[in-house]
Structures are given as C-alpha cells and as structure tokens.
Length: 82
Image 1 (tube, rainbow, N blue to C red):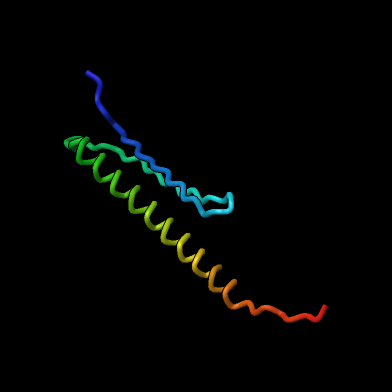
Image 2: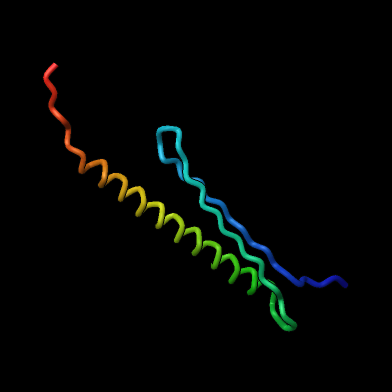
C-alpha cells in the first residue's frame, strides 16, 4: 500500500490595485510526514502556515500602498502663471 511522505500546500492571492495594476502574493510549503503523523493534521498545519504568510504579504503591501499614498499626499501643487 502506498503511503504519503510529503504534503505540499500553496496559495496565490491577487489583489486589484486599480489603474490596470495588480499585486500577487504567493506562499507555499512542503511538509515531511514522520512515522505516526496524521496526514490530515499535517495538511491543516501546512495550510495554516501558508495562509498566514499570504496575510503577512498582504499586510506588507498595504503598508507600502499607504506609504506611497502618504508621499503623494504630501506633494503640494505648484502655482504657475501662464
């Protein structure tokens, strides 16, 4: 009978940034199963780790977007006489 020795889990999240731009966050993990491990429990743990990494990636992107917005907001219009 065949046995499961590894479990691979991956996720991709694509966020539309508007103006024809998008951000793609990817995460994956490969987990080795040891003797006595329940594959369903290892899969659930792997999935949790991948989801957390995607959330971290999205959080970093939100911070980056916020920083860029703050920089844009700090620009002052220049009055010109034409």
